[in-house]
Structures are given as C-alpha cells and as structure tokens.
Image (cartoon, rainbow, N blue to C red):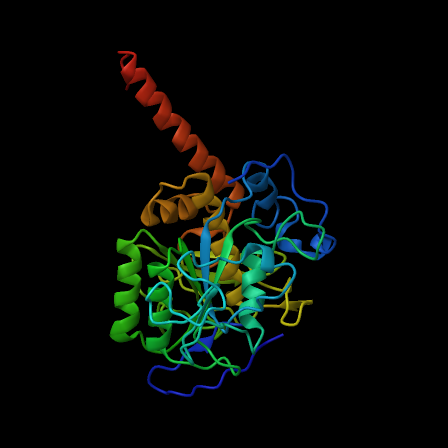
Length: 356
C-alpha cells in the first residue's frame, strides 16, 4: 500500500516516505497478531528476539513527527507520552510553551494540543515503534514500553513544509524526546531543519529519517533530511522479507546508513484497527524502536554513542548502504558488554590492579 503525496509548497515540500528497560525472559506470546509480524519473528529479520531477551525498553520518549497519532488506539494509548507540565482539559497553557493542553503532543498545523491523525501514516509508524507489548492486544512494537510523543506536522494529504517539520523536531527536543522519527522527505533541506537537528544533537537526541520511496541513489539525488551529514542522524532504507531492497526504496552507499524491514509491515491503523504498509517510513520506525531499546538499557549514553552502537552492530549486507542491515540483538549485546567492560576496568583500577 502506497500513499500518494501532494506537494503543496514546491520549494520546501515534504513528501511522506511512505508505503511505516525492563528485562524480559522471552519474546511476548500474548499479542494475538504478533505471528503476522514477520520483521520481529525470531532473530532472522533484525535480531528482535535476542534484544527482547535482554530488554523491552524503559520509558524512553520517541517523538513521531508525522501526520499525528490516533491517541485512542487501544494498542497505543497505554504508551502515550504525557506532558508533565500540562493539566489536561483546563484550557490553559500551563507549561508556557505556547500550546494549550498539549498533553500527549502537539498539532503544529493549527497550533492546538490535539495531534489527531487524519491520514493514518503517523499511527502506523507509532505502532511499529511502540505498540504496547505483551498486553494481549493486536501487535507488538519494537520497544514495548517506550513513550510515544505525537507531533503533527503533515495534513490529511500528507502534505506540509520543511519549516514546520523543523518546528516539530524542536518541540520534541524541548519536551524531552530521546529519539525523533521523521518518516518523510523533501527536495531541499532548508536552514531550519539543519538547525533543528543540530539543536537535537546538542541535547543528546537521535533523529531517524526515512530515505524515501523514489528508488533513487541518494548519493546522486539527495533528499532531506535523509541526506544531511549530521552525526546524530540515522538514515534508513527498507528491505523485504528476503533481505533485498524493497520496491522503490531509495539507497546510497554514502548517504544511507542502514536497512531495516519495511515491506508488508503490520501495525496500528487509524480508527483502532491494524493494517499493512510498506516503504522506508516503516523501516525508519523499526530503527527508532531499536534506538529506544538501546537508550532504555543505557539511559546515560549520548546520541552519537547510540548511533555508533547501532550502526557498528549492523549485519553485513549486499544492499547499497553504508553500515549494513539492522541487528537489534547484536547492538544490545555490544551495548551491554561495553557497559560491563567499563565497569570491570573501573573496579580493577579501584582495587589497584594493572589494567591493559
């Protein structure tokens, strides 16, 4: 299923790149539709089972900068971010951020605190990242207990402009998001989005961008924000069930960091149901969920360190990308072993032992 995208502002148009830590002893079996989620089945597609055996994510906040989110969806509602500075329903901008009652996020198109999804794309992305795991309902997100911050920057036709996207990234950073997912792309970067991602870097926030569904080589024909060279940015293309490049997915040996499952991905749908979507949008959401797992396991790790662990653990792949294919299990092992190694070195030094 593909979304057609209307470019409303030609110079800065944004096109959807569309079609979407608590220890755990084993992967969930109570979510009835998990058997249809091929991307998280065992370790084959992206190492989900091994990662879940070690962590299922603490309350790491992931901002979904998109078409909004269906806040009433039963598989998403338990994992919604809640603004600690707002008193729900009192009609007052309690935290002084310029938005009234932005309890679970913001609508930057109308300036309200109601980021309702009138398209469905953002809801699908949110479910891939963090549909509630092990709750007996529907599907399982990559990060079972991550917090979803809904930031609406695109309208019902998935149209918008890059300056609004930049404002969405800034809102997410200002309100404590650790990961920002931007499953969208446009032909020009604009100074606003560059500055917003730089601000995210300064705050220790990782930004995940979809490579787009143009089928093009981004090394030759860049799109944004995917083609920016910011050290806290992870650019993602989509793979199919066999590990090949998904249809129409953009690529780039220098411009695209990693591939992740993006073909026929089952996730939450607007209105409370579930649907399949495909594309680099869904692949980017897998990576955002993976980063949320890693951040939950090591809360003090900076944005660039998280990115390094994720990309340094990627599987060898024949796809034209820089690092390889997403392997969440390998990244988790590397992250936790790194923490144990450093703790052992500190303990040895404290005991007066020689450390090489």
